Length: 391
Ligand SMILES: *Cc1c(COP(=O)(O)O)cnc(C)c1O
Image (cartoon, rainbow, N blue to C red; front, side):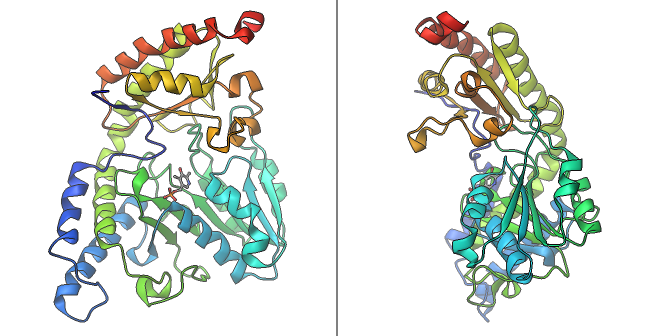
């Protein structure tokens, strides 16, 4: 395989060259500890402070509302557990059936994490992956400690009306967390006008490195740290800062702000070309997720009567990287919980492929993929007994 066509940007992204560049000095000469009293360490501290401003600027937040963590998963856990510890008398969580495993599996383990039983409302979604706001309103109670909803879905790209949902929670005096890992850098976000109390993001999903994340904590929000130790992050997250990655994340946020328009125009154009092309050429291919309430970079397409894993293996032979909607890692080939929540029929959910683009993709790459996908599907279907009987 001489070249890679990377259409799996919701799984992880390339570290942008300008991000690598600002990180390098912090691995080599600038290795000081930001907490040290000497000015050598202070250089690391300056890098972290500058990054905090860059992140805050992308989000429409204040620098002191930015807490650096190790990843999106840590940020999600910190927000939800903080709310539960802050309101020990409340035993209800509102979330959805389409959360990332970081939230889904935390909720599944809440008793072992907190020692208390919590009632968990997992809001359903419509067949197009969108949410019914009236069901959401009805789900909120005086016992609700926190609402946690994914802003943009990692599998389908479907965007939830988080601004409205946060306003509703605020009006009920309930803390609101959003997993913004896929939304940040892809859609405009202004937390100065969106009453979310917590927002999670992850460096490696927006062209920074792995192992760094952010939890936005609105000023005045009750907060109980998840990592307890030194006084780093104003006592909100113990542990020596991952300075190089934090500095890189700051740069990535600055670049993301500059690329936001390109993401919404050029990336969306490429995504639409790929999506429309496939849906037109390949019979019985179906788009999963709302057509417009969706990230500009994501396309989740079902190919009926074929296995997603088989499609991925064939794409891989041409260097094309994508993801499937069935979790082969579990060995069960269960369709994803997101597609099941949308009620996608079994025959379609099994053959679902997620293509997720970035600003680094080119039109030539999309043309190449459009040339390869139809024969792959046709060949796989020719071997499928289900296609012959069903198709
Ligand atoms: C990737 C992802 C996470 C987890 O982020 P990590 O930094 O890999 O822990 C959480 N939520 C969503 C929506 C994601 O896409």
